[in-house]
Length: 255
Image 1 (tube, rainbow, N blue to C red):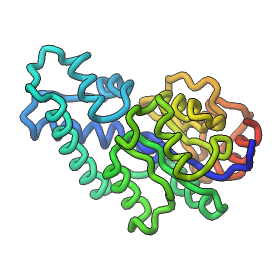
Image 2: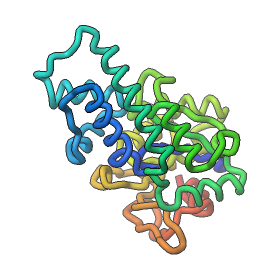
Image 3: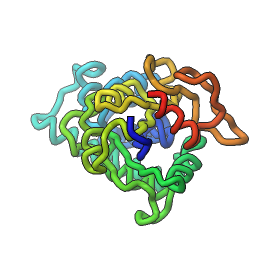
Image 4: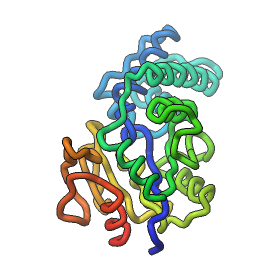
């Protein structure tokens, strides 16, 4: 096991609670604007999260939950156009400040950067969504701390496939055993582990709290702040009230 060199972050559900209050809302607005009588409530969206990727999620919805809908002749183009509009709406929501970062996220990113750890993103969401979120959280693009952003359709297979993590590792010229992945879902956990990253921190949210994270290095309800500590839910250590660089180095050394 090499020394810890980098943190690779998921975005949706990890950096912010974007799924329920961001992407779901944006999907519904896009449906309405397209004249579609579709509505993804909180429970249904939780089921749709079994599939990663927005375009893939629309297709899964049609196949599993709305099979009688009469689709257009060019379904691929229809889905792509609908998803493009949804992404534009999501970016607007981010720009309006309606989706704050999760507790402890900005603290840990800044601490890691100051400690000399490299930072990357590995996500299935589109690059425009990532850009909007990072600009909202960190300001101008030249101020954001991530040197590599692996996002969207740059790889053919999305999480739980390992492709997006492998792409990020290749761009950073790092081996998997030099990195820690920070995720919120089973699909993300499997993606990171399949890419060879053995140290994976899980920060669950309302959609993923009941998923199976057996084998994760650490499972917490949030990354934590001094005035709002994390709750340890599982992993290879006995206590943790805040996920910091020292704890990540310790976890990495145990892997």
